[in-house]
Length: 67
Image: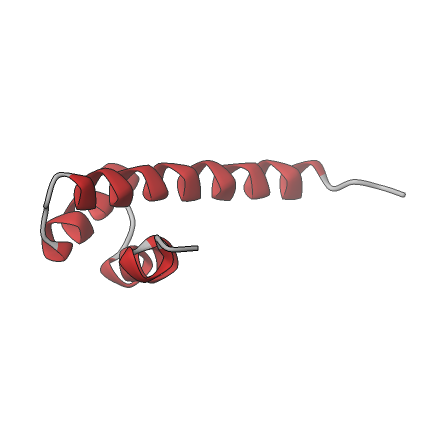
């Protein structure tokens, strides 16, 4: 079985970005920061679009804290 080295690098980068996003979102909610500010922080810190930031909030936001 061959493993695509560039594919592994990209997968790793995506995993790191998800971890950073989760941390930003959880910390934001813990400190009572608004969702709009959390979205702005995600965009700035991770250099991502608003749509990507919204996907992270959807994935790791308050609705998912109970899981």
